[in-house]
Every structure is written in C-alpha cells, then in structure tokens.
Length: 465
Image 1 (cartoon, rainbow, N blue to C red):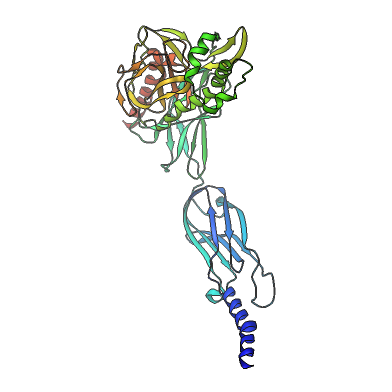
Image 2: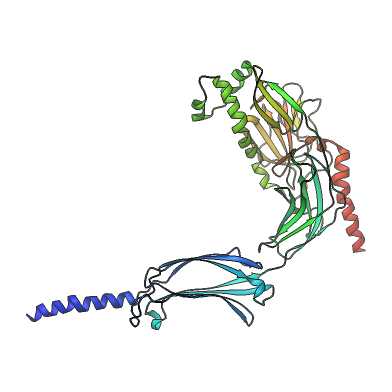
C-alpha cells in the first residue's frame, strides 16, 4: 500500500514538479537574425530582426545606440505574460519579425564611431529570473555626409552611339565609395590611376545607339553608408543617324549555317508545319543573340584599373566595310519580313583567313566559341574599354595573354552566324557596344581623350607651383 502511494505521489506530484521546474529553468537563448545595411550607418536606414524563442517566450527586446556619453534607445519592446498567476508561464510569443527605422541624424550624435547594443531576453527563471538572453554589441560608424564631387574636365561632346570621357575629383575618406557616370539607366564606373592623385578619377561613358539628346548624364558617387552625391557637367550630345539594311535569308544559307547550332531540346520545338530551319534561325536571332551578347561582354567585369592602350586603334588591313555599327537590319525570307535586329559592330571583309591584328595593347579577357559570334576574342584595354573580334576561323592567343598593338590574334572566318568570311569587330565601354569608327580616328582620340587628360594635368601642375 505504501509503495502504491509513493508511486502515485511521484507520478502525480514529483514528475509534474520536475517537468515544471525544468521548463521554467530552460537554458535556450533566443535566436536572432539581424540585418543592417552595413556597419556604416547613413542618416536613415532600416534594421530588420527575425527572432525565434523556443522556450518560455519572448520577454523584452532592447536596442540602443551610443556615442561617447550619449545614448539613444531605439526600441524597448516588452512582451507581457499571457497569465498573471505569479511568475508562472511566459508571453506565449515565440517568433517576431521587426523592421526598425533608425534615424541617426535625430539622435544628437555626430559622424564617427558608435556602438549598437541589442539585448533580447525570455521568461526563463535562469539568471535569477532575468531569463536567457541574446546580447550583442556592434561597432558601427555614423556617416551622414555624401561624398563631394568636383568635375575637372571642361568639354564633353558625345555622339549618339559614341563615347565620352569625364575627369573628376572625389572628396571622400571611404575607400569603398563607388563612383562613375550615370547615363540614363546605365552606370559606367570611374577609376583612379590616370593621375598620381588617388582622389582623381577617369570615367569613360557611352550613349547607346538608342540614347540621344535629352538623355540625363551626371557623375554619381555612393559610399558604403548609402549616401549619394550627384554632379552634373556640361555636355553636348550630337545626333547621329544609323542605316536601315535589308538581308534576304535564302534556303542555301539556312541549309549551310543552321546545322552547326545544336540547341538541344529546343530543336524539337519548332513549327514542323512551316520551315523548321527558318524557325530555328528566327529563334537564334531573337533568343540566342541577347544571351550571346551578355556572354561575350561578361568578362569586362575583370577590366584592368589602368589605361593599357595609346593612340588610335587599328583596323583590319585592306578590309572593306560590309555592315556598319547600329545598322537596323530587316530580315526577309521569300519577300516576307521575319525579324529585325541591330548590328552592334562593324563587319570587315578582306581575303579569306586574313590575319587579324590586336587593335591596341591590352590583356586577353576571353577566348571562346559563342553562338552567333562563333570563335571570339575579347581584349581588355583598361578602364572598361574593350575590343572584340568575332567569326574567327583560328585563334592565336589565350585568355590572360598580354598583347601589343598589331600582334596577330587570329584569322578571319565564317564561324557562327556568318554568311561569308569576314571579321565582326566591336568596341565596348563596360557592357555597352559603341561605334568603333571613333576609335579608328586619331583626331577623335586626340581631341576627346588625350587633350582632355593633358589639360587636367596642366591645371593640376599650376596649382602645385
């Protein structure tokens, strides 16, 4: 009988008591995922907190920022108990997501180092009923001042589809500040290195063949805190008209060229009731073309932060132009329009398998067989300026090679979507194809690049005297 009572006592009193005490003294701290823009804090920003508490429930979230003797409480959220029976039970809140607006400029603190404190506790009886806690002190930098931009170059004339150069001084202590030129919705990065002064930047920028007068152009700088500065500069946009061209697609062209394109499962998806080779051509021209353009320009992200070239760029010797930059091509089959595309380079035809010289000195960024372009070479000349060579029959260089102006890099051919032996030559700034004709013109190079750099150097020299 005594053993039975003892078992009942243990079963109904001791075990529940132990379970209760164990649950109240649980040792699991809240798990917190914190997302702030960076350790550099601008005037205003959002801090995101995702909190998970698997024990007694959340009790308090306390966040403050301090600098020297000043402290500002950003958030002090209390979670009430779900029961008022003494110390029993917790809040019943086990997850919370908080988006906290922080306004550094209103806290009476100056730019400089500060400390962000985050203290989150639960309802555990542990730590003398103070609960388990998540505690973090994060060193941050309050940075509310945008960079200062001073444009040093004077004259900026640019053609539709052409290139411009702007030189500017960036006054900012943050080495991670990104700067360059915004042209419409396209950003072109600026680089130091042309001048001895590291705070002076050179930025090549471009107008696409579709951007003309009225396109917004300005120097832009953004520091790691997200402070943005913009500085306009005088520029004149010259309008330029591009040609319309018509290409007749023949059955012999389709039969000779289309078989080399293996599109895998896509091949089976063409309309078999029509001309499958023609359907394949249209698919390649519309869908594969933009992907190939992205592929050929992708390595430009690895551009050298220095100018590796000098003087005018070389043209394929003895070659006649067959297609021009930004030709608007209308493709026709049996008298019917089947597609329209822009031709983003210049086609040059000479003797079959003619040697191709590097247009200027630089580093080979890529060597590949790329869809409609066939065998390709991409040469980086520094600061985002690149030349590309397509439809080659043979390539004589490899990725990483340093080439000099005039070095033979390969031979012309018919690879890719080429109807005859020729070189498709392209020039690009970052990831925008531009008109190569400018780069073949020594007077354009002199007036738009060399003189501009020399004028700024002379002005800087006068100030140092």
